Amino acid sequence: MAEKNYGSTRIVVGAHYGLRDWLAQRITALLMALFTIVLLAQVLLPAYARDINGERLHDAAGNLVPLGGYDKWAGIFNPQWMRVLTLVVIVSLAYHAWVGMRDVWMDYVKPVGARLLLQVFTIVWLVGCAGWAIQVLWRL
Amino acid sequence: MWELVQSRIRESNASSSFSVWKSFSELRQYGQVETRIHAFDLIDAREFGWIAGLKTADVRIARALIWSYLHHFIAGLRHVWMDATHSVSLAFGRQSAAFTLGSSLILTIALGLKLFFF
Image 1 (cartoon, chains in turn orange, yellow):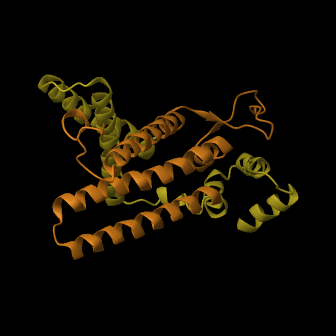
Image 2 (cartoon, rainbow over the protein chains, first blue to last red):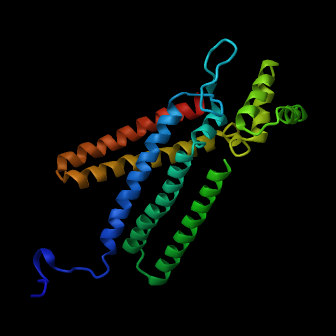
């Protein structure tokens, strides 16, 4: 017997991309939330200079050497795991923004030509920003 | 000054950021802290030195961006929480919206102080 096409199993859409995008937006959001917390913690907590082996350095008086400014910022993005997490977040951010902006264009822009133009501009903008961010990340 | 920095880096055969840092800490001992900061801007911090040169209007824009990011972040957590726990009451909606607005503003102030004053 065929699946009944009413009630809880009624097929209301064909492509199912609504659920996929909804889920993708939540998963990318959680990845970005994790990154935000990790980054905020590292920015707000003090950092100290380390040697190549990861041991904390001491000055002549035996005190730890606090890092600030660019040194601290570069140190945050130096570990491989932080670079990988940042790369994942850049891709997540672009996809998250694409789902959100596409919803906005679909909801509020009715003329098909203008909507297509705005969607193409959004894709070009997001790919450009992601490429730039990746360039900054690996050059740091 | 710039030549001095370059020669220090050559002397220390700098292959790591640590040896560069070490050569700069030597310069700091000579009481050339201010020059050290500018020299660092030129070497590693080409992209970073702009923070020191920010104007008041730029700082305001940066604060607005930080606020919009944090507000979106906390509002997103609110959505994930509502999705996960099926919290759909009007009371929860109002309370969590107020919490989102308040906590994002407090975090923005904290981060703004941290970035631009300390």
